[in-house]
Length: 246
Image (tube, rainbow, N blue to C red; front, side, top):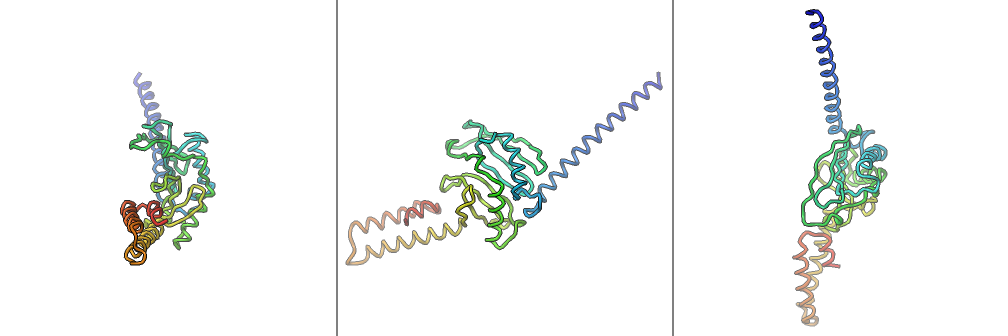
């Protein structure tokens, strides 16, 4: 009886050791994936800035939200994707992380704010790997950098225009943006500076018109006041500033 009991303990011990090894190996693999995805560089062959790798990860997104799914935001890092998607509810969405390995981790997502869901989503079908790769390369070139200097790319609704677009960020915090199809690539800082300069010039011209004895009229005075008020109300909003000087 003692021998049988000992053998039973031995078998249970071996099973326990095997289970421990299994979970230990699984944990080590997960940890390895986590380190790999964080250290992945934009220019690496497996980087999600590459069209094929991005499309493979996007397949996992489609599997979770459907090919016709609506997204709130999608952020592309070289080693993983972060996704916020609509469920059709005004208060609850779904969020998940897609690793380079294909592993999907779901995250709770609660929606807040005064806006409507319909005004804050865009179609998953509008995102394409070829656009991501082309845009990342174009931004790197314009910034005299490489793909390794690109930090991440965010697909989201642009706050100033309300249109969906892509923001490409570099590790030095500079960024450029474009439409979801990659068109209209621009530097928001340069846009804002140009809009401010144009608005200031328009105000100066209107003021000069009012001060001129031969052109001074109540209409031009009102125009100058309205323009100044428009610029003040626009603040740093590029779209509104452009409308003031347009």
